[in-house]
Image (cartoon, rainbow, N blue to C red):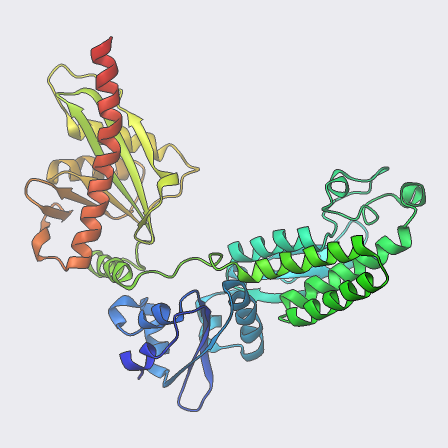
Length: 433
């Protein structure tokens, strides 16, 4: 079995890595923005997802290939998975979770992303389609495709037009590919040249996605020099700009999702063990109420994704509950949760964390039961510094592992900070009125 020292030798740059058994057979292939950080996360089984434990027990050797950028890692990983078909890549992800780039075989090929490698069906027949992949990072792949289309325009129109499409006027389409045949010659004097450029663009995109970017660079540089020698300076300038834009894609180092910090991953794994969850809690929602004797009450919802604040998902609730008997935190918590759960468009968390003690825990539990939700729930009491897991079980925060303690405190403090800011504004307006 591999040990810490085996992973420590890895470089800190982007690349792909291979876990192999004692016979040299590849068990699993992955990619990383930072190879050392990613591989060190495998060194402690407590930090690794349970489904990967068996793979690590079988692994006797780790190899890696350092690459120039995240995008190159994305493409090289796809090539390697297709070549070696590692056992655990297949087990960990079914075909629906992989991305493929489909390129149709027709006069003006179309390009599309899909999870399923089926032939593209039109109204009259099925088009023969070539697929490139599998790609494991859909976000990075979509960015590459958007950037590639700016450099090598191709058609995305779903129907034919009588005049050049809007995208062709923006330089994102060659126009010839989506115009009705009757109007093509009238609209484009250079129709044949445009058809050749379209075919060349599709070849370039195929080569880039298949890991043959150097062939694309060499062809473009050769064409640029030829254009310059024959004094076609405008063509040479366009080719120069294309080369620069393509280089930029591969230089972009912030495309692939950042690797999960080992300490953060450790905290999430500890939560999984503590609450007996099937997986680490990828999304945690924290809730807090801020008020002064029940007036100007505000509720906050903060979201932590992979242990990191996701501020775009934060939400504030102006509490509508009216009370003459001062603050009623439990009723306010229930109001906030009921309003939150009416938003079906917001993804449900893997864990609810409520600010408060047993009273708040029980109040929140009633709301979840009303909606027939089994999502795990915990509450964190500030004054007592206790974590309630269920009505019969509470833990002292100071006895928790530091990584877990810091994560829970971070979520609680962030929810409090977010709520109190709006509460102060509401109270200030009330006083001025």
